[in-house]
Image (tube, rainbow over all chains, first blue to last red; front, side, top):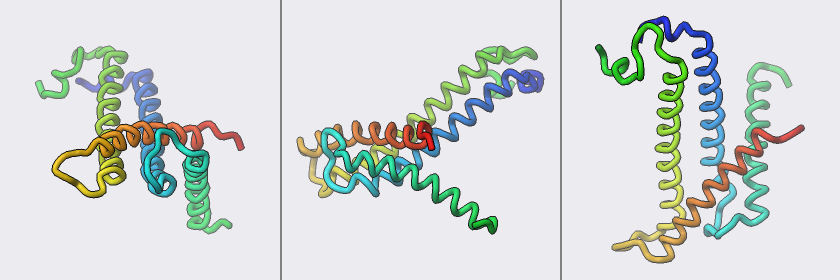
Length: 78
Length: 87
C-alpha cells in the first residue's frame, strides 16, 4: 500500500476511533482480570451474588481512583 | 509485492478506506477474542480444576461452563462501572 491511503483523513479518523476502542477494551480486560481474583473468591455459581456484583463494580471504580491518585501524587499535587 | 499489501482488498494508490477499516476491525476482533479465550481458560482452570485427574469430572465440566458465563458477566459489570458511571 502506498502512502496516499494512509494520508486519507477519514481513514486516519476511523483508525483513531478503533485505537480508542481497543484501549478501552484493554482496560476492561485488565481490570476484569484483577477484580475477578479479588471478588470471586469462593466457588463459581450459576449467577453472581449481590456482594460479588458490587465488589466487581467497586473494584473497577476504586482502580480508576487509585490511578488518578497515584498520578497526582507523582506529579506533586495533593 | 510484499505479503502485507497483497492481502489488502485493493493496493492501488486509492485503496478503499472502508475496506481497509473492515480488515483492521476484523483483525482487532480476532486478536481480542484470542486473548479473551486465553484469559478465561486460565482463570477457569485455576478455579475449577483444583486436583487434576485422568479426565475432567462432571462437576469440573459444569464448573467450567458456569465460570465462562461468570467471567463474561464480570467483564460487563466492570465495563459498565468504568464507562457508564455518573459522578
